[in-house]
Image (cartoon, rainbow, N blue to C red):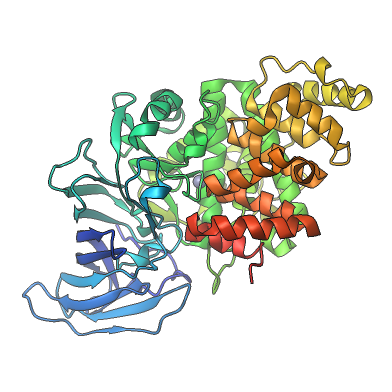
Length: 597
Ligand SMILES: [Zn+2]
């Protein structure tokens, strides 16, 4: 089956419709002192144009020292000009060879590689992790850096003997003793799912097919937090068909990890901010696990169609939460996501609110917002409501089966949707306003709205609190984190800082261990001025912005700070100190908010 049925990817130099990458065999040495990977990659090729003799790859500041053909002779190659976002085009004269080997080393500034010093980890040892999505893989491997191309891979990786190496592949559970590790990934993956982590890591099984890797001091907490993982796998398989990747393990990344999670196949990387102690943030694991179907199995052909990855995955996430934790919690989550989306849409240029995007010429990370996630998920909810679950669930299951290990774009999905779901159900694309959903701004009128009964109870309590000021009357027994978040969001920012002080005294919100609640609370504290009045709150804010580097938490807090003169000065102080510990994905986002110059 062709790996390239789609048009050229605007974010890649590669020409896979001529010669495509089919398999990689990496041999890399990890040098923590020089912040470099060095070695070689043998690339097995698949010809799509008969007489083709030129292989085109993506690179980003790779120092290519030599390119050789299978008979050992040197191959001519040309490295194009460097672009800060797209890197350099590497063209290799491969003749009729069916493989080629590139000898290279990475740049210390490689965008995918985060090198952590001992002081930045909980183990006190060095740590390296990669983040290849969206187009950063080219900064550590010369390859065709487009999600429309899939390949299998093997790798030999040499690291310091006291560290464990892991990849998005079959993984060891113990140190090798020598520091040399051999990996194999038989399932074909796109480049953005190439991943490597090296650190003082230990393994703990969670179930027959699942386990967790973490630094020793957080391993117990991680094993406790993620105990429901196997139950979640069973729940998704019941809905959407078999898990196709053999194992599902989690890696708790260091605090500077810029995302909630990264769905690297077989080994999801997650932020330690999930370790709330009460298993209350498992929706994020549900999300990353769901990517094993939507994204990793059926993959957006280019980053213009990222909603096909993230919208489907967010829909699946909420279905998994419903399966495992019940309808009431799922409805709260859906309502929070709808609040987030309405808030986001109100502040975005309409052109940035489309599901199908045109990001040509731009860094796809820059065009990434929650629109693809939450509008995409609402679109699928709308379809589900229009045809009913007895039709919709088998449709999705068959979609994952039919397009497994293949790329997908919006036009192909729309055609599939029309013939496989809408026509059999007797529903027309016009009555669902499909064109407006896929190609129009904002939200169409038939977007689902959620009314959680639990949130309505919170709203009534907040209304009464604002009248009486009697914090002691609040009945918070049995509240989930979602109810706490909803409560904080419902507090008017001009309600007076003495009310916030009373709430803080009663519920210890500034010392809270659940970071999802804490980020809402600190945002409220900044917007109301409470954070500037109480040194303890200001200190907690600075600590939170320094001890973790998750962009989802950093962005709203820095935005809230810079919206006032007093806050802007404080934002500059905090950011100047915290910035060296952040990942490049995070500094890229926050540099656009806080002006340090
Ligand atoms: Zn996702």
